[in-house]
Image 1: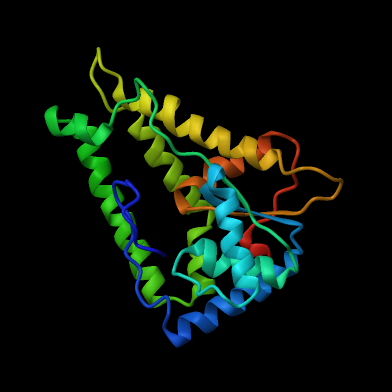
Image 2 (image 1 turned 45 degrees about the vertical axis):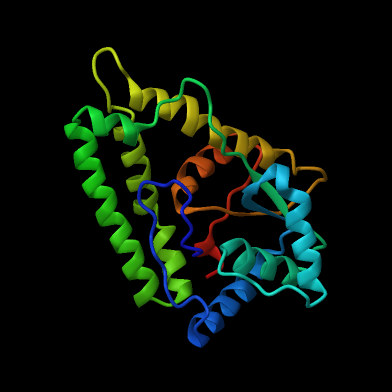
Length: 233
């Protein structure tokens, strides 16, 4: 929702977040999500910046902070306040790792038909996300993004990215195993670390690209009973 340059190959451009209709829709969504009764809210924000994030949240509770278009603010802060929570929890990890190739850079030097096909498909998916955000209510947009078939599509793209490379240079597999899976495993661990008392109800707010793999990790752990946004919207 922020439209920032976060390094993603394809990032949807969303408009009208601060329009009166969209703001009313976001407020309605937050009230519905509050029925989940979260005890903690985990957000896509660098874990090492948790303190500064919560300084912003405390200022928001005091009425001194103007929400930006970031979903961490528009949904995370609002839901935390609506739920009577004193803090939010940053659980993201996203850093460069030695030996992990940049697929986009590699494919600029070596033509890859697999990557070219995936690149075109990702562009179509991104265009569809933009259209859904602009055409649908915010509630319907979230429901659309969290459909099982959208999760499967995202996983399909990631697994095909793992095939990019040559007989000697397995850049796709290296990126998928040593960055993508590693990053999401660390996010998963950070979420698990929030389990402090019996009956924790953790609301996880994350980007579309992470939804399927994080849900898989959390489900497979046997530590969680998973509920989805469709249960509340």
